[in-house]
Image 1 (spheres, rainbow, N blue to C red):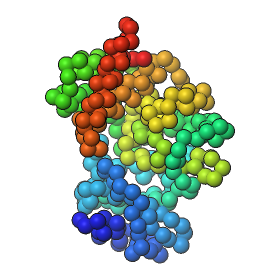
Image 2: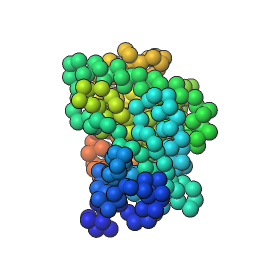
Image 3: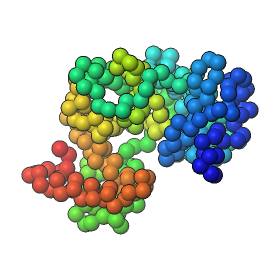
Image 4: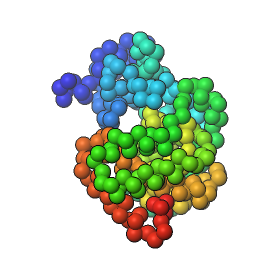
Length: 303
């Protein structure tokens, strides 16, 4: 695929999209962005702007964690409950039934590009806490009926550890094994978790209000501490404290300890998958984390 082709909507999607949006201007579709698993395109329609998210392996569908067959019914159910999520979704299925593309209205506002300050910081913390409380209280049984699966982070971490083992020193391996073993021994709450709360997935309007949360491709049924780990990683611990102060769900020392571990284990994922093509930097970060854990007197890395 040439660079020019990558900026066009892939061939083969037109019929399915025009069946639902007959006046959409597909010839002028433009590439919005590209991630590890997805390319996103903007499409103009008389009813407003739409986003077409396409599997990076197109014409093959998404298959990670069972594919994204759950996404359209889940987001519709969340929208019905008033959560600020993309709306009016429909899927373009492959022959196997899994989506190769998901089409939805573009959320209003703009993605967060810097850490909010002052009143807007408190405002975002309160609204994000409300979003997470509502998401985490969504009935797990209903989410399962949509096809959403459980993918325990400790299981993922152990698999990543096995892949990354040969890149790590003995000291780092011992520390990571201790971290993961502690997680494996915990009795964890289960909730619908976004699993990728970061600035670029939060849309705010000109007043600083949270008007959209996007990218539910990593969503699973798992430990709600995972969402708080992402917040701490992208916004810092002081902002996380503000979010937790407004959060209506249970907050405990165990949740905070798990969030801190999940935050550190993100670096292990970077080493195992080499997702960003910078494995050496991720390895150095793991070495620094292991060294910091050993310097903490009596610490097992859960601080």
